[in-house]
Amino acid sequence: MVATIAETDESAESEGVIDSHKRREILSRRPSYRKILNELSSDVPGVPKIEEEKSEEEGTPPNIATMAVPTSIYQTSTGQYIAIAQGGTIQISNPGSDGVQGLQALTMTNSGAPPPGATIVQYAAQSADGTQQFFVPGSQVVVQAATGDMPTYQIRAPTAALPRGVVMAASPGSLHSPQQLAEEATRKRELRLMKNREAAKECRRRKKEYVKCLESRVAMLEVQNKKLIEELETLKDICSPKTD
DNA sequence: TTAATTGTCCGTCATATACA
DNA sequence: TGTATATGACGGACAATTAA
Image (cartoon, rainbow, N blue to C red; front, top):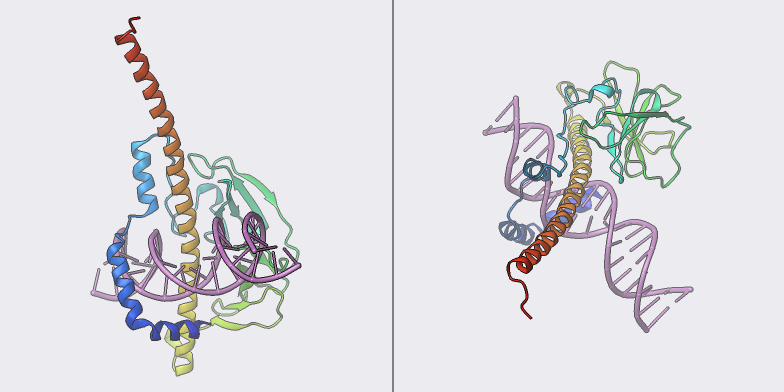
């Protein structure tokens, strides 16, 4: 599939690039949703701020600082925050000023592989063979081996006994053969795609939040406008009473 | 019932932007 | 200046809806 995309890109490069550039010249780039919303929030008290992204080492909220899996914090469609902690504990918090205050906690039992077709964005579990699994979209899992000098990662089908392919196995410094270099390039690409995948999800979430914010602001302004019009009419009546 | 349409979600690519 | 991140654009998959 990837090769097909690459070939298509190459064949359509000459005309596609020109179209793409023209399109991008027309479309002026907007600042990030986070910036816009935070600017709005500084102007309008009622507008919530989009939380700043925190790095793994500094950004974990105080109440969930001991999490084994980084970035395992999600927001539901209802605005709640879900944090997956060690041992399968899932913490749920309602959106508030501090984000993680008032955490609720519940423990879930991890019983084997997820059902086929289940929509699991990301999930961590300790499997029987001592490996840690991170479920990624596309009905695959990234498996981290528990033993060895350095962590190795494999992409597997959730129920498959054999790995589909090793994507992270050796340090760059020890690469020699073209095959190893190719594997390293593949690994880097997979890593980049995985990061971008998560970034896209996060970006869409922020965009939704941004749109919601704008919609609520529109509603608020409409109410305000209506009130002002009514007030104006009242003042008009007072200042110029009808003479029959 | 079925094909067409529509809406939504997701992954990927290209590129602007932020940052060390 | 190179690298990481954010985001617009695009296309595919899938489910729900609609018209014939």
